[in-house]
View 1: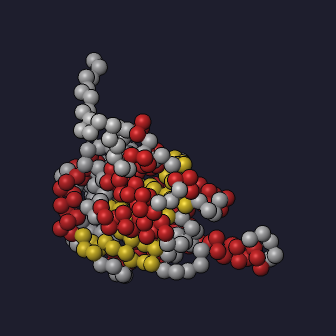
View 2: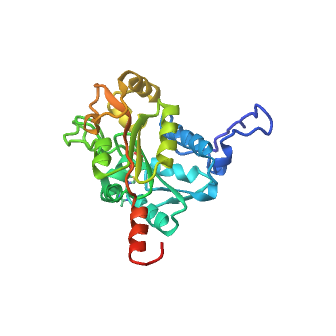
View 3: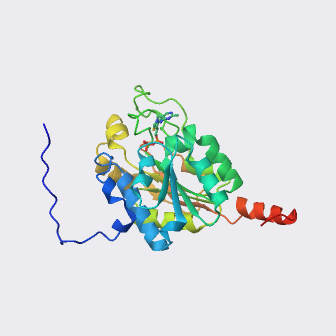
Length: 287
Ligand SMILES: Cc1ncc(C[n+]2csc(CCOP(=O)(O)OP(=O)(O)O)c2C)c(N)n1
């Protein structure tokens, strides 16, 4: 039977949300569950874009597969939904072919650090000029909540019903030690700080990385008795401690214990494109 829906009343006839200009509104409603953190990430990315004031034609956003990987599909920009784990190679090609583009990768912890992990560490090692925004919800949300490389020890998922017994990655430590020039972590509770972190990452040269910890109430929250999205935000309020400049090694996440957020790395070092140009000049080739 067809479902009857009531039209949403226009509060101010003809009015638009100021961020609507960046959205493919024809693709709304979105696919995300109630209480999911991805709407907050998308919203803050739009505010970051607006603050930067870049020409939309100079920005390309690339994602792999997953609930997070759907973010670029809602953006009125040049966006690419690549195969699972391959956002970084695709973004690398774009940036090398057109170094003037601002290239941003937005994807999930599974896409970037499991199947795509090798690409990520080498892009960081090369200090490739990309910004990577990783939404960490501690599981594979899209495919029904399997365990992934960030699932905490003893975390309950569909593939670890008795508790996860694999050590998780600390994404801050991993990206910092692989060579990233900028590394920050925020939660979806830290709206303005997350937006500021995105702006900083997108303007800092080299490989820049922001981890955003986000609720996945349908899969991770429910199985781990965290509750709804709001309960998880309350958990962040009680457990996240801002410590800029902390040692990335100390940024591991253990459920029930305080965890660190903030800006961990902000370094100035030659980028892949700078070194490529210098080598090309040394060889007498095109710059
Ligand atoms: C080659 C390949 N293997 C597996 C899958 C199935 N798959 C789709 S999304 C996904 C995991 C996504 O997890 P994550 O990146 O953490 O994103 P989330 O959905 O949690 O935002 C997997 C395993 C796939 N699409 N392609």
